[in-house]
Length: 107
Image (tube, rainbow, N blue to C red; front, top):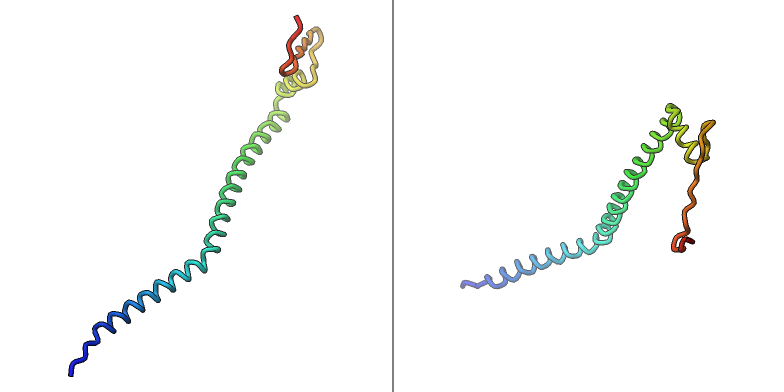
């Protein structure tokens, strides 16, 4: 007597495959919040790296400015003339006043 078990064999393989797919789907949805947290963390990390780069540029500019103020007398003289309005003896200081934004100058 030959019994045809081919149908049950095929059905059991399909069920095992579907259980495997269901398990993979469950693991994916289980780790989905962790994946999203990791993506957000990487975005923040990239933005912090960009901010560090900008701050390093500012730091370099400030160091150059401090070095110029400490070692270059012409820089000190220029800043004193610009910001304090000082002049050497015998020079005349001329100051210009700008008009307010949107105001019509008088003629």
